[in-house]
Amino acid sequence: NASTNRGDAIIDVHGYSLTWYGSLQGGAGTLRVKSSGDPGGMLILGTDKIASINPFGTVLPAGTVNLTIEDGTIVQTSGQVTPTGGELGSETNNSGAALAIKIDNGQIRSESGGYTFQRNLILGPGGGSLDTGAWIQTFLGTISGSGALAKYGYGTLVLDNTSATWSGGTAIHDGTLVLGRAGSNGLLPGTLATPSSVVIDAGATVKFNRGSNKSFFDIFSGAGSLNVANTPTAKVRLVSDNTYTGPTTISSGILMIGQGNPGEPGSIVSSVVNNSGELDFNRVEDLTYGGAINGTGTVTKLAAGKLTLTGTNTYTGATTVGAGALVVNGVIGVSAVTVTNGTLSGNGLILGPATIQSAGLLAPGTSIGSLTISNSLSLSGTALMELNAASGTNDSVRGLTSVTYGGTLTLSNLSGTITASNAFKLFSANTYIGAFAALSPASPGSGLAWNTNTLGTDGTLRVLSTAPVGITTTTSAHLLTLSWPADHTGWRLQSQTNSLSVGLSTNWFDVPNSTATNQIGLAIAPGVGSVFYRLVYP
Image 1: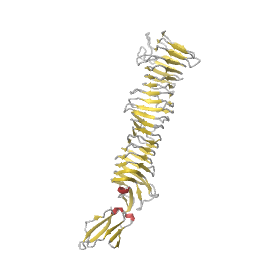
Image 2 (image 1 turned 135 degrees about the horizontal axis):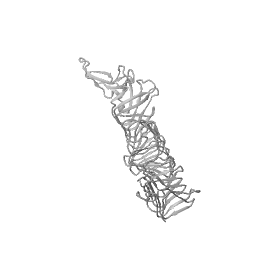
Image 3 (image 1 turned 90 degrees about the vertical axis):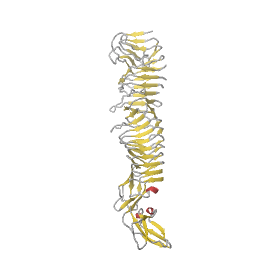
Image 4 (image 1 turned 180 degrees about the horizontal axis):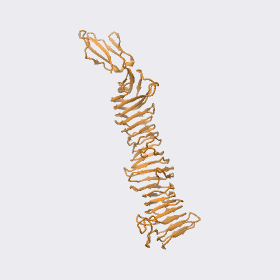
């Protein structure tokens, strides 16, 4: 039968289950469903609905609560709810304001079909739970109150809410909580000053389905998972230190860790499957991430902080360092790494090609160390190599198929005094191409110079003496051997041939391959005029 409520009314099921096959039509008052003595009682809706229209001419103030669920459960067993009406649906008061539902230690549960609420939801101190069953529940109104929100059931709860101010936290016990419907709604209540707690149980998921950028200050924890399925350019910024351990999946859109402001948090610990989206690290403070990043999506390092990757990452999308430092102490797979403005560092392994653009910096190792790049390296910016003359060690890049030199090679000696006998193997490659445009400092010390000749043959930077030195000659049969001190390897041996009557002129020629050695043998050819030799540098 139908029942019309013209004032306040209470349905108290006293711990039992009451099935209602008629309609409940509210007037100006509040309908309260409760279960005194036993919170397990239920009001089960049959084929009709609870309609909260106010047909009697009384104007209710905005935000009026005209359905309260206390210590009990309302169960929807049949019928469909649409955005324009239905069980606990979209009715407004005479002033056009949406009516509210209040849950205080109660529950709304669906056992047959999904439904949509356009009303505001108020959570009392005892909190409220929404059990989707296997269906989809959608809330379009605001959510407020001092209680907690709990999601049960293996179906989907969609929050396309315009405001979120409840303070009791959120728990997703089963199924999926979806935030948004590809628009600007879909909110959680956390703020930077007062982050809220979102606990995701094992097997449950929080899914972002937004169409606009939004920062979330809520702290996600538990063994459940997180999924970003935004429109392609929409960002979800996690500005909190999250501890959930289930997988993070980026189906589309952008997941940003931090939002680039000093002093603000931003971190995750779970592994990421980045299928076709973008993962951005935008935290100013240093961050170490030990999870694995997989999939075909891209990774971008933003903000001034240092990001250290220690996991084994197999993603194939591009890696871009736009600010700060990317320290690879784990593995980056076949991803192409490009440093546009920032630093690439670490002691790990990169399987893809690396490019250091003009504003970028390569600084292998941490202190003295080696970065392995099992691919090509192209240098147009700055390569910073730390040396230790006392121990004879230095930074290096190993495993290269090829290295293309360019930009500036900057050397920093940590300990000891550089001498003319030092040699530092900086690069190990199959092929060496080009030359650095500049070295800094220009000289390793007084009376010394950098010998860059062997950078192009074996990746070794050597040090030579610039003090003038004589040439030692020996002859044997028809061979003339010229030699000079080893610390002058890198000087050029030059020669000219003239008759004795002419003597020396200005027509000097470099002896081939003389810069790579300190000794060379020359055949003595009878009948040749006078041959003159000298050593020069540079």
